Length: 115
Length: 112
Image (cartoon, rainbow over all chains, first blue to last red; front, top):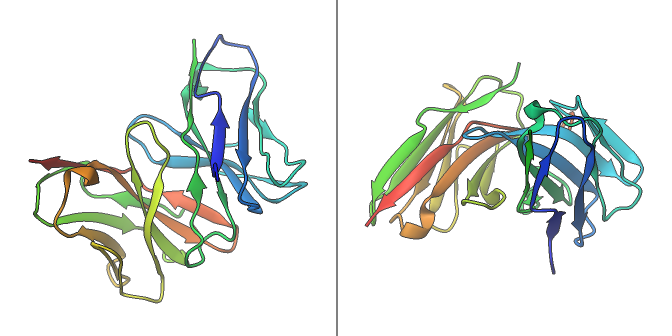
C-alpha cells in the first residue's frame, strides 16, 4: 500500500516555465488536497477536490490549476512559474476529512525552486 | 478571519520529560482540531484530533486538551523520546467549506 505518492521530489524551474506536479493515491479516497509550505510556516491550501470531476479553490489558488479526472490522481499545474511559487508542495488525501480515524494522509512533498 | 496559531516557535525538552505544545485559535467555528507531526523531509503525520465539543482526548503517550473559553489547544507528550523531535502543527477543520487551516508550527528538540 503506497499511500500518497508525489513526483518529482525536487525540481528547479526558470521564471515563466510551466510544470505539473503529480499526485496519486491508492486508498480510494474521495478527498484530495494540494498545500504549499513556505520555510518555517504552516501549510496553506491551494486547491482541493471532493471527488472525481470536482475541484475547488483553497486559500492561495492564484497561479495554479488542477484537474481530477480520476479518483486516484490529482495533478497540480503551474503555467507561468514565478519566484513566489518557490515552496514545498504537499498533496494529501482523505476518506472523509475531520472524522475520527479518517485523517488526512500526506505525501512526502515536492520541493520546487523558481529562479 | 479564522486563524490557528502557535505560541512558541521552538521547544527544547530533556529526554524523558513531558512536553507541552500550545496553540491558540481566533475563530470558534472549527468542528475539529488536529495535531500533526512533521519530520524533516516528510509530509505531516496525523497524531491525534479532538472534536470541538470535547475537552480532552488521550492517545498513546499523547493528550490533547481543548479550552474553548480561552480558545486554546495543547498537545502533551509524555516521556518525550528522541524520535519525538519534529515540528508540530495544530490545525482546525471546518466541515462547512471542507477546509483545514494550519498554524505556523513549533519545533520540538529532544536533548539526550
